[in-house]
Length: 378
Ligand SMILES: Nc1ncnc2c1ncn2[C@@H]1O[C@H](COP(=O)(O)OP(=O)(O)OP(=O)(O)O)[C@@H](O)[C@H]1O
Ligand SMILES: [Mg+2]
Image (cartoon, rainbow, N blue to C red):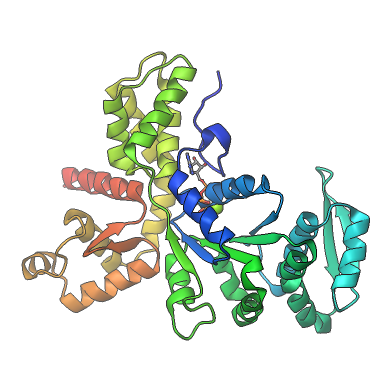
């Protein structure tokens, strides 16, 4: 029987748990013409949510949704090519129409190339000289608006992994063009590097300063997980008690990727009814699987950052500047301050109200286990 849990890439349909409020709010915002920033850490379910929104909006006849993943874009030329390709495929229906319309719509007359991928998908490209590049960037960026007017439809453009734009040096251009697109085109930006996105959208000197509504997506809560997990167990003639789900939730804090991974292992090891023993073994297995990744992150920290991370975990992220705590740790207030800032910049910790926490909850668990092992060895 196939394991009903999945972790890795985006999830759809039955694999997608809740997020009803976020979807409703996002949908409302983009339909109202707002530009929105969706920030969440890695593997939190951003892409799944955005794709779900796309599916949802597709049903309406007067809306076109374009999803563009910027993860693999590393220079302007690639941006133009890939963005053009996605727009071409979403805005027009047949190859002839694509060629004709783009020749009419674009100010310059590009050679449009077509290649067929191994899965028989047609990909469109533009052959551009260096000189044409700048003009074509502007024209391609304007396509969503041109089509919105031409077809009298609302166009929604989703830029996933938007932080990658930073290295292309086209922020100003992008912003100034988007500004002219009125409410006919909405832009939805998503990304996981908080330090970069914060700079981009909240630094006064940056082009995108305060140009978006920020929508925060949260962990999925316990009762939604219970429903989701119990249903999947029941559908496969197995059971798991709420108490065990809670145990998993306490470690993962409802972080989607880890909840799914843990449940994947638990289901795999359960014949009929899950037990505490199975849960414990599955957590151990997950620690082993994730160990390499955490070890790399750990190795790349300075000695001060390592000590500070343990200090944060030991104090649950609270009262880090209290004299008693500092004395005990041998940190001075200024060192802990700059070290915390460096850890925030590295996207390892973040601040909520007055306390600091590890963005990756399972890394916190890994660190606790590692500290426990090393202190029991001493
Ligand atoms: N709504 C959801 N319900 C259940 N599981 C989810 C949900 N969203 C995400 N997941 C879990 O998290 C994993 C990662 O999801 P997704 O790729 O959408 O996240 P992401 O934030 O885009 O990740 P990345 O930062 O790597 O791009 C999925 O494979 C799945 O296991
Ligand atoms: Mg993603």
